[in-house]
Length: 253
Image (tube, rainbow, N blue to C red; front, side, top):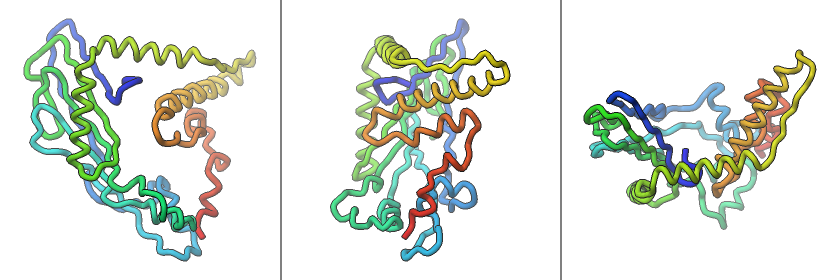
């Protein structure tokens, strides 16, 4: 994952010529209602009781896989509707919608996958045209709020063309330099002489390092980073009620 460009690079190097197959595994295949524990991912829109507004069911929409692409795979997920206004209404903040633009409506994210020597096998799969010792693959990602899906694709193609024209070796050098500088910026490591505490402290150290990595990956965009406790809580196994946002119990009017 390039530290400076929205692209994931996979290089296959082999002493003997090999063939490769690159496939998209998408899980949003149809429109369906979120329910049970899965619905907690949208807990801000779940009924808590006593609401003065209607709480609508929560649905997840399918992804779009573009058909007939020449030697590439393109997919995207596009918001043709938005929960932004309904979410604010549930929190008695509907006045905010009067002078702000909806940040979710028509927001589109997805990717373009292609590689040197790879040809189309299906709308979701690329394969080697012939065996090769080196097979570079690139996944160009884009999130943008555009009027049409076509405008999103035009922007994605322009990004892919620009990044693809850059030297891969030079991008790797700059990428490694950024991460080296990041990890050397500061260090915190907890140690102990007590063997019975060693495993717990290893998990805490791992959680801290994981959270720093999450911050580095997600902290350079236009939007806030997700909750900072997630990496530590998941890595240490200390996921308790104290980690849960208490606002979920008082979010509705």
